[in-house]
Amino acid sequence: MNKLSFLKALFSPFKPFKLKWYCGKIAIGTPYFYPRVWVKDTENPKYMKSIPKKIGFDFVGLGWKTKWTDSDYRFEWSPVWSFVFFKWQIAVIVNAPEQYHYWEAWLYYENNTDKSLSQEERIKQCIKEFPLSFKVSNYGSSNSMSVNYYYYILKNKYHKFIK
Image (cartoon, rainbow, N blue to C red; front, side):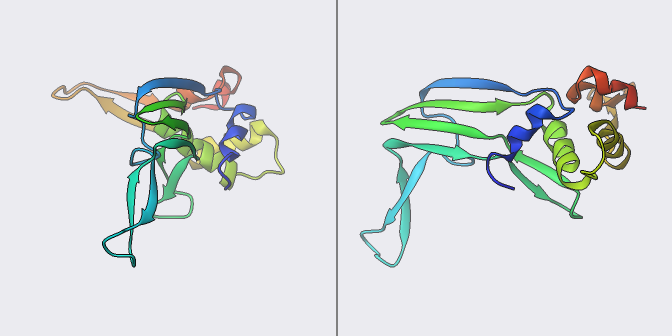
């Protein structure tokens, strides 16, 4: 997948994501570390070392991996655009509802459903093969309830396919 493929989510059965803006001292990682550049180590020219970025842009695409199978997706980080100017940063972060469930289900929908089918048929396949129904309880409480996260991440017109 390329870095911008996450934009396809805007034209899918999934709710549109929002953009979260940050402006201030450098605080947003790209993805795990603050913006940085790699330079030759002056003490040992065989090695490179990282230094904080003074001025520059970074774009980080959707971060994910698979765990046990080729379709067992794990969300790692949201897409981020970052501009650094000395010790200041402007960042735009893609913010989806219920991020982990949203991106993992969207990756399944995008990569593992039959693209020859309609969006409705593909989302039915996604819900069946990649369930997001969990028992949820508060810490220390014996009460639990069942939650299907598809209600939170799909556009309302697709709710009729959730069981």
